[in-house]
Amino acid sequence: MTFSQWVGDRIPTLLRPSILLSISLYHFIMTIVEIVFLEWRPWKLFDLTSVRFRSFARLWKANGELMSAEMPGNTFQLLSECKGVILDIGPGSGEMLSHFNPNTITALYGAEPAQDLHPGLVKNAAKRGLKDRFHPLVCGAEPNTLIPALNKSGILKVTSRGGTAENGVFDEICCTRVLCSVPNPRQTIKSLYQLLKPGGRMVICEHVANPWRTEGTLAARFMQLVYTLLGWPFFMGGCELQRHTREYLRDAGEWDQFDLKYYGPRDAVPFVVGELIKKHAPMDKSYAEAIKK
Ligand SMILES: C[S@@+](CC[C@H](N)C(=O)[O-])C[C@H]1O[C@@H](n2cnc3c(N)ncnc32)[C@H](O)[C@@H]1O
Image (cartoon, rainbow, N blue to C red; front, side, top):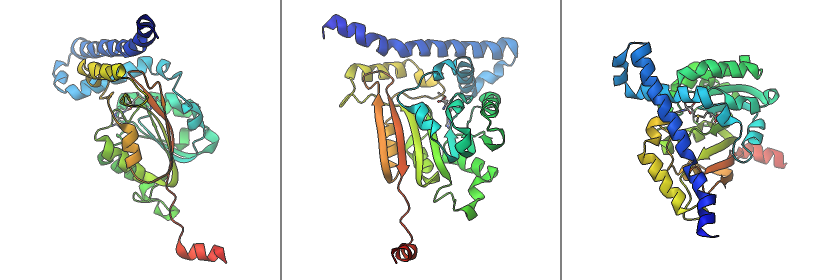
């Protein structure tokens, strides 16, 4: 490959995130304008965290649908295979819900901390025919907010059906484009692992640090650093580009299947997509002996 071919081939993918960064900057400015000149509540700007999250919700409401029309790899197929009691982490305004199969879902819990996105989320769940089986939770994935919200919803108390917070209550946990934003990702992912039933499945579609030592490139890894320094996490609702989410997932606990593939490994926003199956519980000794006879 010549240098000019390399420039033509690589530069657009490396610069593409700058478009999203510019859009997020626009929404941040518009959020400030709304707060100061439409609501006349300039003191609200002192709560910078809520301004940032409101600005991200504004961006997602305007562009979420478009940004969800295509997803890397077989994400849509993996979502369509979800069944039983499901936890969707950070479902946003529910753009992914149209890919679930309502006939195989017993209950769907959506842990979405951005309250501004809930009206759209509930509407999309109803559109998918999940109205009574959908449980929107105003909380994050981190255990200090998720566990109390699950407790309140009643799901953690359903111990008679084999579920506890320790040995898992969910058949499936879906994480699409969200683990980049959760605080303390290592611990948060570990606690999600615990909420999964033995033999349960985790569906993953997450962008990660560029794997420049193996399939990726140093240029893309460098651009991740540049975008971070330009304020990507600040303007994008806490989204971090340089996370080693694949490793956090692998170390979260024992898996019977750990099937994650890179998509766009040479890009500034490469994804890992796939499914992980939590190790099945060891069979009860007396039961194993009984079925042997
Ligand atoms: C990029 S959007 C993805 C939405 C959806 N999962 C999808 O793929 O269409 C990220 C979502 O994660 C949510 N989020 C941010 N921090 C979170 C946290 N700590 N726990 C759970 N969700 C979070 C945001 O509010 C937002 O709705």
